[in-house]
Amino acid sequence: MPNLYLYTIPVLLLATFMVYHEVRRANRKRLILRILAVLFSAAALLFLIIPLKYDVARSTTAKSMNFLTEGVLDKDLSGDKYFTSETKIVQALGKDRVSYIPDLQYHLATHPEISSLNVYGYGLPEYVLNRLQNTNIIFHPVDLPIGFTACNWAETLPASEIQRVQGSFNNSSNRPVKVLLEGLGTRLDSVTIPAGKHQSFTLSCTPRQTGRAVYQLQAFAGAERVASEEIPFETIEQPKTKILVLASFPDFEFKFLRNWLLEHRYPALFRTRISKDKFSTEQVNLEGSESSNLTPATFRKYDLVIADDEELASLGTLNGALQQEIRAGLGLVLRLNEAKALSAFSKGFNIRSTTDSITTAVQPVLSENNQQLTAVPVSQPVYLAANNTQQVLVQDPKGKALVNTALQENGRVTATAIPATFNWVLNAATADYSNYWSTLIKQTARKTTNNFYWNVEPKKPTIGEQVKLSFQSGSDVMPSLEVNKQHLAVQQHLVLPFYWQAGFRAERKGWNTFSTTAGKEQALYVYDESAWQALKAEKLTTDNASFEKLQGKKKGSSEKVVQHVEKSVSKWIFFVVFLLSVGFLWFETKILQ
Image (cartoon, rainbow, N blue to C red):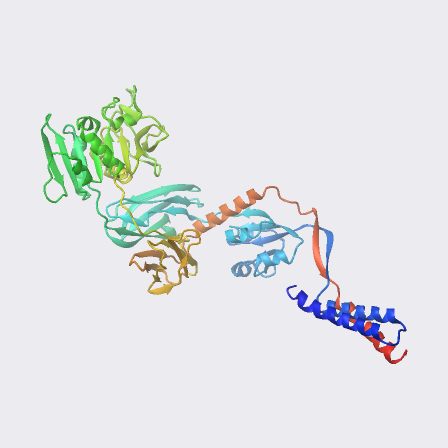
């Protein structure tokens, strides 16, 4: 009790004064009884103000409680009594079967005999589970609803880049479902999910617009639309990667690459060796005139060099300048045509020749998203062996590496062993050709620095949710932050002084913009409350199943448990003692003298 001394000290002083008064009294009769009466009255007065508590241990039979969460149906339940914190569940199942409790944690604290909790439905939120560490959770999941249980895409996409929408769909119906990606009124890609399957999918497109857009991800079972979600993202114009292409001889691979770079507006310079000291040059999307003579300063103008191994071996002393620029951040894509390493760059890769003369096609698989590309109708002369210092970007279905990449300080060198990717274009698989070269360029080219980083939690906020923003500032001066032109209070990170945090409640559906003192503006999309229901159900189910597994073995409902209960002595006892003590002192003074 916080005011224990505030009450105890005055009572003790009063008792001391009264005892002193009794001792000094001239009449010494019944002195001991009078002193005891004074002490009893003082103690009774103190315990009237401060409750006297004691601990009682008792053994009782453990009980379990049935708790219903979102997603539970009448068919999932028996005839037992249930509790819930969802009013819509009470309305759906009836008050005679389901009792409403506003706070589960408080209810368990006031009913210590409940040792286990049977959770039905999708499960409890993570923040509730964290508060129930001492309660045994027995999870009874229900079937997930039909819909998208996972989905990811690039929220900010450079112009002309491929947008990939990857996720999983739960088709619990007895009909196949067609998943469609639609943008600006056009169907861009589709995939079919078989009946009764929970299957992953990948849809892709190349957005033609710049700025913010909201695509649609829809699912149809026949003519019936069974799910629909929004895919918001922003396409931004970024400086294109400037590419230098060095070829030891004219070939179709570089010819088709030249056409693709031209179509996708990459600025590039092609230098092709005709004879020992003669070259032909061709500029693509470049302004001005570039010389065919290479100097150390030439490499500083570009973000990426694409060259075959033979041409790199012919550069001579320029290899040192190229190596130095790679360490400073330049990227190099190295084409390998044979098992023998010719340049210093190819010697860093474990090149292995193949003796397979039967296989006439190779099917590349992008390791980034496990996407299988169309088989290339060409024999594969070499593969790349695994290396702990290298990352596999492309491999075949058997796991043999076709493209490996390695860091060299700030830059990166990527080696590709696929000899003729232009066969994709010849076989009308231009999307696979774009995916392949976009991946190599994105992973290898010089990285541009971004001095503004921000993060949003949750990733898919809905109306009414609390949204947390964190962003980086270049100085320790407190920045200002505006969301939809309203100022927010900013708090500095406790550990990282250059990170700042703020929060607000999402109230407006659609794009919400926020900006900082430095003029940096970003946008986040707020969804409707009904969005991504299957995804939320999947997360709840996974969290609750993991929580139950971590708890280990559950206690049975028939076990005897010992409970420690704190009780208080009745104040009426102290009131009676006080009256008797004070009454004796009065009676002794007035009557017995």
